[in-house]
Image (cartoon, rainbow, N blue to C red; front, side):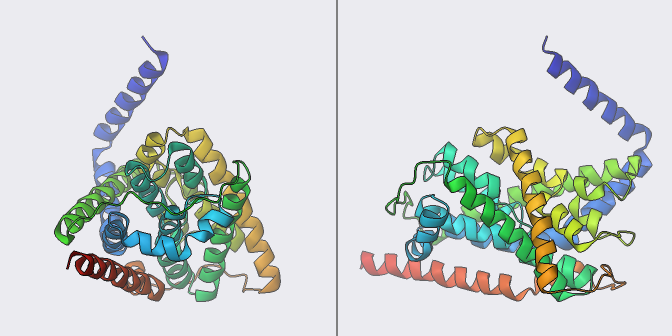
Length: 341
């Protein structure tokens, strides 16, 4: 019998016994995790994922790829069709990048090697979480949130550029395997995919919060485990560069949320983990550099009691993306209708 399987069985049985013994603590932690997902993840991520999936599941993404796909080709040495996934992944927040990369792989529009390269850098907290939730709501500073987001974006782009030199550079012509589907099918498929993804995320958050409420991990290592509660807690006293590094790393909880995407690309978790650590170091350095040019106050956290979900839900940039995505999708449908006539 495989020793790895035996160790896994022992670990899971032990964890189950611990949760049963400390059922009250686990229940309270699970309730906190459910509240966290209900108040932040679901309202801020689900609508965006539906829009993004609708674009990625239709030929609407071809419009974006044809107009700006040269960025993927010349900067990242990737097919033009990957640009929408990169754009939405970096701006929309984790785990959007991994989910949309998996969508391209499942549709046969990229191969496994290209998917692995995307997964190494297409990972970011997004402007809704970093600028508004962490910056404005938690730290009471839009400027600090912007610095954090800029540092994380620069880190991701830097890794993408470095990786572009690991493969023979080919200036791919545009291609797409998008099928012409009617709007009802696209909406149904997109909604099902988005709901499954959000439920998966919610389940991991509940599990991690339940376990953490039993173990009561030190606040100093919480950002490595669960990023939201790790850096948005009242007792956190991290510097801006440290927060930037934690955000770029993302937390083990988020890593677990995209294990399925990593597995479908036949990518080892150690590979993914290495680039998360590399990205964290780059983000730390970029934040240090930006602070030299644009100094910010040393006090990081404020006592602002503003609801995180409130900030995330009204984020201007994400709203613009949703509107733009809708217009692109409508343009695609109009084009199909015109061709049909």
